[in-house]
Length: 64
Image (cartoon, rainbow, N blue to C red; front, side, top):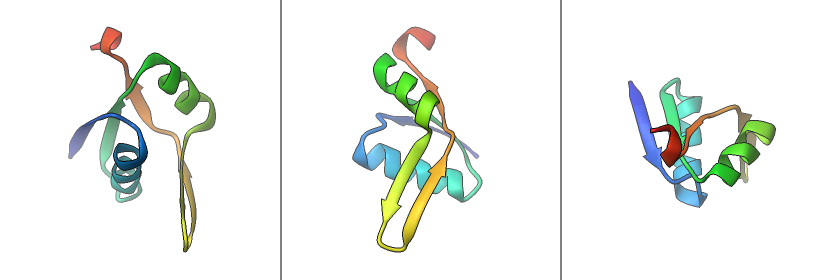
């Protein structure tokens, strides 16, 4: 299944990351500065039971 999540902040990033972890095809709609940061560092989710880091696809309004 494919998902487009509008916003990659705390909630969008968390749920997007968990969907990626579960095997879903996820794209985050973010601002250009955040897209560059995610391309460089990947999406990092820190929880009490550990850390999860993954590359994530992004798109900006200019790329739609």
